[in-house]
Length: 231
Image 1: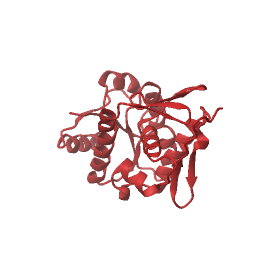
Image 2: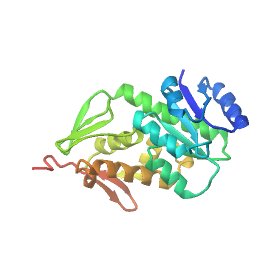
Image 3: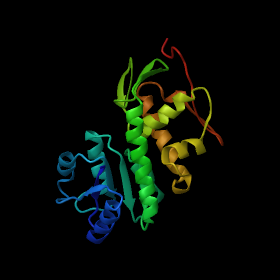
């Protein structure tokens, strides 16, 4: 049974979401003290976090940053705010998805199922290391390393990199990436993929690898293979 931590201060909405998720056999935890979100997260060890942006004391962005310093657990943001910068900010902080309130529960369930299936089935199946552009890509630890150091990627970032490396030197269409990441492109803003790829490219830039993920305008993305990029 997957454990989900729901960080939501609206009691009626929390209870409604918990009841609906329980019907799908998810074990849902709430927050007792909104000043102690990280402590409760550490104690619960959830498989996925759903977090509202507007919370008492500190907002969801703050707690997302804090969680990301401890864990790569999948994170879904909930928000009643409709400004595009909220979605962009959430993705830049390492969230896996963003759900706009009010939402249809079927959409939320579909997103949860897609993320859990992608993250945990993918981790169970992917056991090998790969070499790409002189770097070692460790799919079990979500790490990319080369002579400049090591970076730890989020689940989404690693999954995107894996798909691109699988088809290196070939254009991967945006539609394919969206479908493989989120199962149903009807639920995904086109900007969500753009933000995720840009964040991945920026992270890889710390290892001098960002330039090997290229955008093909109107088509998709391509991972360029260069055997000895530092030679």
